[in-house]
Structures are given as structure tokens and as C-alpha cells.
Image (cartoon, rainbow over all chains, first blue to last red; front, side, top):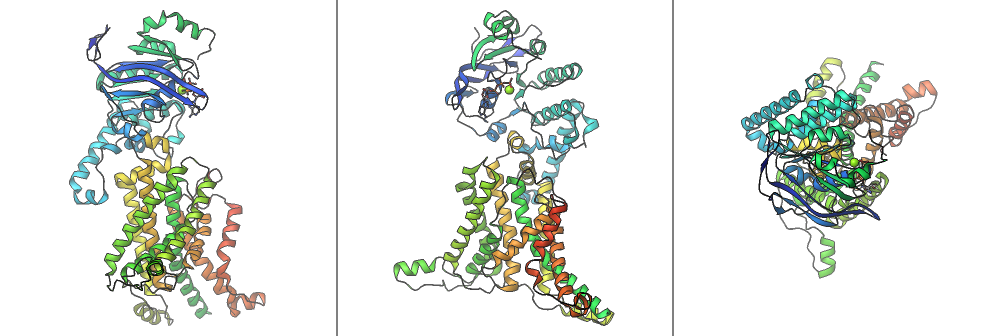
Length: 272
Length: 337
Ligand SMILES: Nc1ncnc2c1ncn2[C@@H]1O[C@H](COP(=O)(O)OP(=O)(O)OP(=O)(O)O)[C@@H](O)[C@H]1O
Ligand SMILES: [Mg+2]
């Protein structure tokens, strides 16, 4: 077993760092429903960590705990080795943990570019008065934010829809815009809830490539939920498997593939 | 006949100016509704309360003096100083920000995610509570408000139009000031919303709460800010109205004219609030002019009616509702209210 602070090099030559985030004995209940049952796992710096499991297993709930949207009844989250106090979702975002949603949460009334620009809100200095006084600084900042946004838009190949209101976009492109908005904040950790759901094969391939490129070029740590096994096996360094709120497996894709409990959980469960 | 036409034009202009005040109150409604989905019935009372506070600060009135005197058997009413208008306005702004914070902290923070009707009921409670607090704090008598705005008929316009048309237009200086201030206020708000960090965050919250959280926007902060801005808009409306007809409790009722304005303009549209305000202002003045004139309605129908200003706005809004429920510029309200 690796120590929490040790790093290692993967087969394809990427360096995975120490543990940046650790979930310890997390339990989350909704009334009588136990969405997460005493789950512990960690996320290492620079890795792509997948969370898989059948419908209703508690995957999204786990992501919501990490991003502060849900408050677990028990357990704690360690960030860079230190116990994290219960943070509000916006505070988690301000710490450099960006996310996307399973059901997409975009600003439907705004264009793609404006949506992406909101991802820079936390990098802007505040106060209209201050901005009026330090006009030069504010302008420089605005230009810089704009450049960052355009760079991400280019990176995700959505230049052609920059000025389109997102309400007019098809599902697959919306997912991409949401990713762009998360990325433009230059997060250290990126949480993706089913980034490829509802996409065709070609769109899935594009999205897989983007995720790998983000990880590779920006060194972003990524935790993602995905149902498509092929995609999960290709992308991820390590996989957590959940079923009925419990963790039933945790390891490399090949470990998971040969894990009897996982195979059983998936038998007879329909997946797309 | 030409005389009648000039007179109608004058009525039209006066209506525009009255509409500006309606628009200001409606603007406060729209700001809060857009950002939080709360239909703030208390917006009119906020205008009243801010005007009361402004007069109170300017005149050095001791707040809650009735209670203090009754409890301690004292007889104090005034500090004995006069605060310059500008400082008093600044002080009132601080009070309105404090009010925004209290409203968010002690009421709406506990009602997040509730049905719109529950939020609405809360604002009705808030409205009467605030009216009561205003009464207790500053007393219920009609107060004169004079922050130094010019008042009375504008002589220049009167003379120039008289020389041009042989008919002098009576336009009140205060109405001109109100219009200019309202225009500046709206321009300021638009710049704020478009270019400042807080303004952008505000637009994000107005669009989608979940998405706003995910980009690091604190809903709580934005809501306090929006209530503060609405409080400021209320103060501006309160100053104009208070200067015109004295600060009195009927102000909160007049402010309910903002309701038909919103039905016309749509609950979520800032331009809608403004255009709606102007339409109602002009519409009710022109309608009153037409219906009460024996030369017009009298000739045409054989009768005249007056005091139509009391109901015209509501009927107009009702007719409008039937044909365009979302208002002139509004987005689907059916789903939200
Ligand atoms: N906000 C909530 N209120 C009540 N119950 C919830 C809530 N969120 C999730 N649950 C319940 O928790 C359980 C786990 O749900 P969750 O969305 O985490 O599953 P999931 O693994 O993401 O499923 P899927 O693959 O369908 O997205 C389910 O039984 C769900 O009904
Ligand atoms: Mg899910």
C-alpha cells in the first residue's frame, strides 16, 4: 500500500501525487433512505478517479457531499490532510473545486460565452466603486478573464457557438459548455457527474479526449461518475464502486474488472 | 380644439412623469423577484419607511420617542439638531441595508425552497410589520420632506412653449428632477448589473441558483445585496413622492399601483417595469382627462365620469392580462407565481 503522501508513476508515464482529498466514514441519510453508508475513499493529486455503480447507488450524493451541496450526518472530509469544516457549496467552489451536474445547471438565459465567463466570477475583484477608481486594474483583469474564457472555449471546440444562448443548444453541447464553465475557474479538483450521459458514440469520444487532455495539460485532478464501463476503464486510474449506498470495490480498472462483488452487483442490471 | 390638443399633450407629459414614480416602485419589485422569486408586497412600505426614516434623521427626531416617553415618563421628541439632506440620505441607506440584512437573516433564510405563495405571505407580514415599526419609530403624522429639490412650475418651459404655441405647458420642476434621477438610477443599475462582479453574480443568481452556487456565488450575500438595492430604489421613490405630497402612510397604498405596472411590464423585466410604469402613468392621466371633459366624453357619450385614476390602472392591467399574461417583456410567469 502507498502512503498518503507518496506519489507514483502510472504505466502510461503520468505522475500521480499524494492524497488531496479523503472521505472518512461518510454516512448520508434522507429520512429513512440511507444514500451513503459509512464510505471511505481518497482522491490523489493528478489522478482520474471514477465512481461507478447501478442507478440509485449514491454516486451523485457522494459528489454532492464533496462539493458541499449535501451535508453528511456522519464522517468527515479531509482536504490536503486537514479536516474540512462543513462548507457551503459556494465556499467549496472558492477553494478551487469545480463541478458539473448530472442534470446540467447552466444559465439558460445567457450565451455560451457569458456562461463561461461566470466561471471567472471568483477571480474578479469586487466593488463597483473600487473598479471605478482602479479602472486600469479592472480593465486588465477583464481582458485576462476574457482571454482565459476564450482559451477554454477553443480548447473544448465550442468557438462556433460562443454567442449562442445556451437554451438553444442540444444536450451534448450543453454538457460541454458546463465543463467549460467549470474549467475556466482553473480548479485543482474537477467533479463531473455523468459528463457523457445521453451522448452518442462520437460525442462520448470527444468528451473522453477532453477529459484526458484537461488532466494532462492542466494537471487537474478529476473525479467522475460514469455508467459506460468502456469509458471508465479507458479513462480512470482508480475506481470506486458503490451499490445501495455501500462501497463494494475500490482499485484500478483491472482490479475492479475481476472483483466478484462488483460483477455480482452488475449482473442483471441494465446499463446504457 | 387646438387648445384641447395642447392640454392633452400637457396631460400626457404629466402622466409620463407620474409614470416614472410607478416605474421606480415596480423596479424594486422586479429586482427582488428576479433574484429570489419572492414577490415583495412590502416594496411600497419600504418606500414609505425609508422616507419616514429620512425625515426623522433630517429633523433629529428621537426614534421610538412615544415608547420611550411612555415607559420612562420623559418628554423627549427631538435631539435638537438638523442633519443636512445628503448625510441623512446616507444614513437612511445604511438603515435600508441593515433592514435588508435583517429580512434575509431572520425571515427568508429560513424559507429557502418554500412555495412562492408562502414567500409572498411572508412579505405581506413583513409589509404590515414594517408599517407598524415605521409608526412606532417615527410617528404617524404627515411629515414635510424637503431635501432641497426644486419644486413648482418650470417657468422656462412655460414661457418657451407659450411663445411657440401660444399655450404655456405646466410642467413641475420636481417631475423633471424625478425623471432625470430615475433615468440615472436605471443607467446606474444597468452598468452595475453588466460590469461589476456583484452585478454579474446577481444575474447568475437570477438565472439559476444551483449553477450560481457552483461558480462560487453566495446566494445569501446576493439576496442581501438585492434587498439593499431594492431598499435604495424605494428610498428614491420615497423621496420623490414624499417631496410631492408629504410623507404619509397612504404612500404605501399608492405604491400598490406598481401591481398593474408589473402585470403590464412582466414581473421579471426591468425595461418592462419602466415602460409599464409610463403606460400606466400616461394612460390614467389621459383617460381621466378624456372622460371628465365635457367637450370630449360629454360630446361623444353624453356623460362624463371622474376619479377614474383610482381604478383605471387595474382595469387596464386586467384587460392586458387576458391577452398577454406574461406582460410586455416578461417571461413565463404562469409557472412561477
Ligand atoms: N435530495 C434528495 N432527497 C431525498 N432523497 C435523495 C436526494 N438525493 C438523493 N436521494 C436518494 O438517495 C439515493 C441515492 O441517489 P443518488 O442520486 O446519489 O444515486 P446515483 O448513484 O447518482 O444514481 P443515478 O445513477 O441514477 O444518478 C436514492 O435513493 C435517491 O432517491
Ligand atoms: Mg446520479
